[in-house]
Image (cartoon, rainbow, N blue to C red):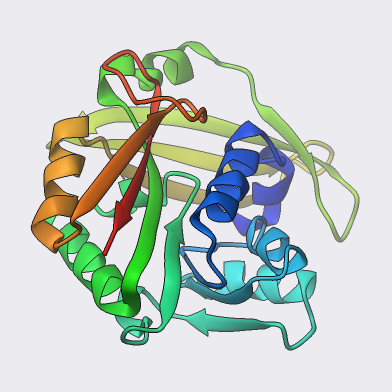
Length: 238
């Protein structure tokens, strides 16, 4: 993710509202937002009265997050799943397809184990991931127009160009470049990698991590995920 433009390209939407509704149904209070990034959704948790810890390994993103909520209500932590405190949280949440940045089965397994360890008995793990059968990358690659944003400090219009390497060893690789429209300056180029896991693989990984009850929803609705769902939302209970 590129903190400079991330919030402008990812506005509050159906997916965010679904996560908030799921938290309300789960009747939780202490929330760990793992991979909170710029805090785009984290601040909504705070506004709804949750006790929130926001965790992310990206120092620049976390700096953006802290600007959004300067009070003491959020415990911002620079780190990864290993920083989760033992048996502390009612829910650990990974949103915006953060689950796909864990490229190896070992790293994904460790993340699930850390989340399980950090949850209280009866606690919840919630995350989303794209369905590989939907082949969303085909739509991405057909779009050759830039996304648009504005430099928050100078007001200069920005273009975000994306190029694709495609799949390399089962990992999808692409690049995002942020360029000033007027200056022509390239502000940042970021290499992105994503792992697409099947519904069966994700289900099994949760069960192997110890989650006794596992539910999965499809496409940000309270309906069971199907093979044609473009996105899976998993909900595991310790």
